[in-house]
Each structure stands twice: as C-alpha cells, then as structure tokens.
Image (cartoon, rainbow, N blue to C red):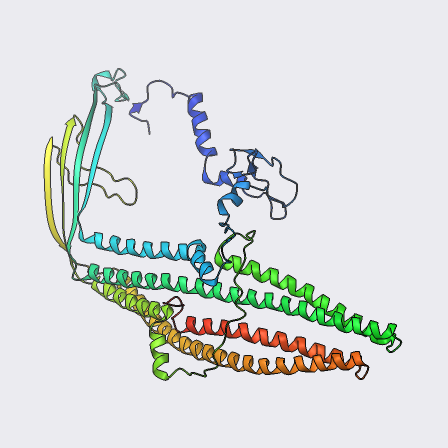
Length: 535
C-alpha cells in the first residue's frame, strides 16, 4: 500500500559530540565499578594510596605507592593517631587506687560513650514520634522555561494530484515561555484513634530501656575494672611470693653447699638444692609474664593506652570479715528487681505490648487535612509541583491562576490491603510474646547469678581462712626443717618438701584472698548494687 505521506529531506546523521556523550553515559553505568574490586579471588588487591599511606577511592591516589607486594596493606599513621586511647599521667602524690581507675574508665572506656549515644538516640526517637502530631509544611519554588513547536499538512501542496502530502510543510505553531511557581503545602493528620499515642508509648519504653542499659554499661565497666585490678594484684602478689620463695631456696642451697664444704653433706644434696632454686626461678619468670599481661588487661578495661606506666595501690593488707551472711529470699527478690538487665527486659516487654496496640489501631480510620497556597508568575501553567527525594511529596491540585489557595479535609478508612495489617499485628504479638519470654529468662538467670555469686563469696572466705591456717603451719614446718638440716639432723628432701609446701600455702592464701575480693565485687554486680554509694 502506498503511503499518503512522504518525508521531506534525508535524515540527519548523529553528530560526533552526541555519540561521545552517549558513549560516556554507557561507560559510566553501575557495573563499570567492578573494575575497582579485587580482580580475582586468589590474587591480592592493590589499593590506591597517598604518599602518607592512606587508602583512597580509585583515581584519587597512586596505585600501590610504597605498598609491598602480596597481601600486606599500607600503614596509615592517621589511623593510630585518631584511634589512640588516652594515656594516664603518673601520680607523684599517691599511686592510682581502684576508685581512681574506675573514675577514669567511666569517661575513657568506649563502652560508656556508645551507651550514652544510644540513650540519646532513643530520646530523639521519642521526639520523632511526637512530631507526628504536628503539621508538615513544605515550601517549594519552581522556575523553568518551556517551548513547543508543531506543524500540520497543507492540502494545497498536493502537486501530483495523487493525495500524497509532504509531511510537515503546513502552517506551524510555536509557543514558549518562562515562569516561576511558589507553593506552600500543608499535611496534617488530625486524628488516628490512638495509633500515634501507642507508638509514642513504645518509644518511651524503649528510651527507658536504653537509659537503664546506660547505667548497666557503667556497672559493667566498674566490674571489669574491679576484676582486672584484683586479678593484677593477685599476679603481683604471686611474683612477690615467688621472690620470697626464691630467697628461701637460695638459703637451702647455701646450707647444702656449706655442709658440702664442711664434709657433712653430699653433692646430691647440692644438686637437688640447685634444681629446686632453678625451678622456682622459672616459675618466677612465668609469673612476671602473667603480671605484665594482667597489667595490660587492666589498662584495656580502663580504656587507656597500653603504653601507660602507672603505680597502683597495694591492697594486700586489707582484712576480710569472716561473717557467713546469707541472702534471704526477700533480699534476692529486691536485688533482682533493681538489676539493669531485668529492668531493661521489663521495659522492652512493655514497649512490645505498645507496638501491638499501634498495629491494631492501623485498622481504624484516620482524619486528615491538607492544602496549599501558590503564586505563579510568567507564562507557565502548572497544576502540580513534583517532590524531590523520598521524604518530599508532590504538591497537587494547583490552580492555573496567578494566585490560588486550597484547603481539603477528609477521612481515610482502610478496607483491604491483602492481609498486610493483620500480618503486622501477628508479628507484633509474636515479638511481644518473645519479649515476655526474655523477661522471664532474664529474671531466672539473675537469680542464678546472685546465688552463685553468694556461694563464691562464702567459699572464698572459708578458703582464705583455711589457707591462713595452712600457711602458718607450713611456715613453722619450713623453719624447723631448715634448722634441722643446718644442724645435721635433718635431710635435704624434708627441707625441700617443707619449702614447696610453704610456697604452695602462700600462693593458695594469696589466691583465696583476691578471689574473695573478686567474689565480693561479683556479688555487688549480681545484685545491681555495684556503683552505688561506697562501692
């Protein structure tokens, strides 16, 4: 079939700038960034780095500058500088006490900072929930230029008489214009039958939980510093006891060597004494390593630099009470009721219950009001202004007049959504049930921890008392054995047995002492009393 229309002229070829721009757009698609990823799973990645060693995005540095081959990354000094922990100055007046270190940890330990930020975020979440009661106003200014060109076909141009007309040779119309539109939009949810109130209640309970966990974070830091402090003190005491044991071993060795020179002893006695001295020296070296490791653990718990060197208070002379006090059932219940984890679990359960109410209220109608005011200049006729971004809604129902205003009110009734709201309610109910189960589990765990901490403290007190009696007997046995050996009436074997017994008794007494202090801190932590007045 022959067309009645024919195009005038030949189609123009695309210009070179147009082709270049099209190629650049195609080359800049998202998959092109795969070239910046590691090339293969079994080959190292070579990042772009600056002269200082900082890893930068591709194209912003030099590839592999000062970077050794293989899987070694460049060293960036800024990382260490920015992430360095504060250092404590050495106190000249007195060594650092446990209270001093706890005070430092509460400001230097990153856990308290994160807990504080989480609590602040929860407070802001309450403010965000409250903001739903207020109207949303949006001001928009749109300016632009429009142009249109149209042509029609003219029947007088049918020179062949066959009805075919050249396309686009008729009279044309051209319109263009520039203008500006200024709008002020209003959106206000007036009433929703309690849905926002339930959401705010859930946010309030979540805020209470985060505030409680902020206190819990401080209690955990206090407990960690206390445990690390006493653990390091126990390691230091063990080093001190091993120094004393080494002196005793050298005394026995000197006695054996003296008897050998006097012709009363044997080389076997001397060899055994030297072996015992060497064994204690080896234990001393290992204990000194443990002492240094526990010191680093204490600094880490405090949140200060591992390069800090400070003096610490000696707490070895504190008396321990032998009162065998037991917690009553009522005391355990009160302790559980003030534990941060229990209180936080209770607040989380209440928040989950409020979310169930909010989900149910989504089935109810909503009463709203919306409107806008607009002012237009120029020759542009707009009936809507598009929104920019996910948080900006379009402004609709604009009048073509220069100045217009619109106020609408209505009610929105949800009818059918494919079961979405019912599923949300069920999900909220399941979460509420899980929160209640978590609360019960937390309460049971808290009771178990409190009873276990009480048993540990009572066991530590009894162990310390028994070790004190054992240490007194071991000291008497060693003194008597050494005196008898020096006088020639005793044997080297009995003396060494007494010496080892004294060392074991000293270490057992020291370990029981610091274990009791740690158990006391554990009981205070378990009952939620750690960090209170006098603790």
